[in-house]
Image 1 (cartoon, rainbow, N blue to C red):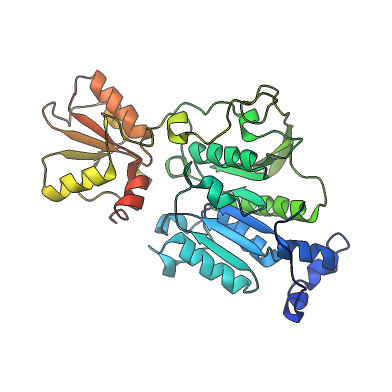
Image 2 (tube, rainbow, N blue to C red; image 1 turned 90 degrees about the vertical axis):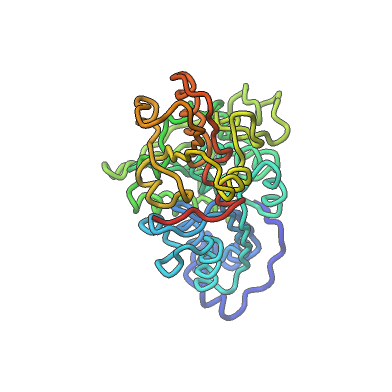
Length: 382
């Protein structure tokens, strides 16, 4: 593929650094210069983004953009190998940039300390040749896919769950996009996140390195890319299998008659709350102001135990969604209740269940604790 920038000749240090690459007939000096001229955006500096970034930096990709708004938590360290114990509570982009510069000081690292959204995705991703999706939620996967197709860039996709992973390439001219495979997202809460369902620590290393491999192949123009193929990995069986994917003629994004021509509200599309709060929601700023005033309200975290232990809003109590939906004996009908989860989806479900049970003075935190972390401050540690 054609990269966006011209490369300068390799220095003596670079010739020594990449000697094993250059000795490969499929790479050579010309191929290494292509890698030096290449630019890749990595969405997320977590389980998938960590190994992908490490190997792309070591390979000599000339410009790497890291997009992440989160901070390093102790629960991250069993799989997010960009970060270490000394990085706890640091912004992930800071520890990622420091680690990548140590691996390869010859490359350029762009640190985007923000959450990717419909408002900023096209501007952030436009300068890069390839987008590598290391996200962990459906809303961001659809956002990355749609932005990649609208920008005409490949989306190197990866996902993980417990002991299984997937890899593919979406958005190539003659191949399918993510919406061809999943026209609609699953119902909210049907598929647990890694925080809820768990993940074996080595799994994202396998999937992230496969994503990095596909990106390098695309830049070099060698081998057979995973476009039109979904690679499935089962760590327990130590097996790979492959599914063939077809470009859907009815795809609303990449089909012959597209109806999606701009980015949308992906939280709402995936069954979560809208970008702006409605009457059932309270924004993080509004909640912070009320807590500061000492208003009488009951703040309930409906996430699972590992999520609760990783950080919570000061003053909250923990009643998981499965408990609060089936047992309201701990609640009083005359109290004002504010519910929250990671992104706002599960708390919205809890609100509907409590309303059906006769509770009326209810609010859900818009955007959940993720938005709270962006707009108010990091969660409190237990």
